[in-house]
Length: 444
Image 1: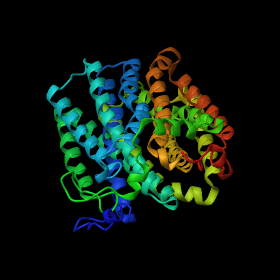
Image 2: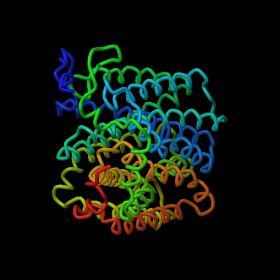
Image 3: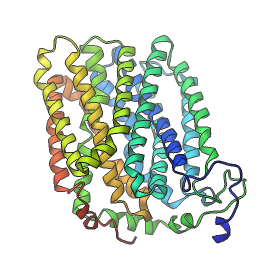
């Protein structure tokens, strides 16, 4: 292992473990790419469907199906903790493969070109696209836990979600314009080319010095990779169960799931609300959503570390929960008196920015209580549960809209948000004294 560490890195860029700028740049690029399928699916295509007569139930089921892979991230994490090509690092080979498959799915979708009437087929393609994105997401999350120092994590988390928001914004805007001007084939072909070109950057940077740049390059596995990568399933599964065998963590997981209710509203309810109730065009909604994503990205990048520094993690999370619940309650109370779209716009922007900031801070806490030995699996579970909640609530939102109306849906969001806040308090989220109680320091 000492010999491996002395292998020359060559003229390539510095490894991620050596360089803070390299870590920040690569994380930003990879999370921007993760925003592409999310923006294309939850904004571009969903608005296109709503503009062409899809019902709230159909749009909700489409969104729920397309986002379902994000709830399967635990499986991805288990695979990554068990299998990798060690000479290229613990996560990098998975990232490269996931990005390549994302481009391939988009290319096949462009060739097949499903129509608006083929919502089931569209949902299937978007499911596959998001499945590729989840492998990339879990690999990047695991890599961040592996190589990012603790004092950088708030900054990195803000950058991660800011970059993803930029990716969502760009994909939303471009998809909205292309789908109005052309068709699904030209839209997905353009995205396939973009993903293929930008993803090539990942090939240029190693995780740790001495590792192979490509499978046929010179290099060897790092000491950290050899020590942390498991060679059998039992230690991973036992370690994972030990890492979550705490009542506080179980309550935290339920809190994470319910906290996604605002995202479910944004994903599945807003397209039909704006297009079919407020009279917007699909390109109008896509452009608006893109602008809000950029605002949220700036807020996430700038405000998240400042909020934690001046108020503390726990107080910041409580305040954000309250803001989210109050904004939804205002939507329900005022909906029947809306004369134009100004109140909706104010509520939507507030919900989006607050939901993004809240998720960033919850992830900071999740990273703090992760066990390094099973980081990919445990963190994947922390992300799978909220994504399952988001997919399930998105998939069922259409029924609530059609049976109770949009005002009732706003009230439901407010109620679930307050329940999530209560669970957050029970789980002692943000309380440093709770970390040992959650098993962060145990050996697995």
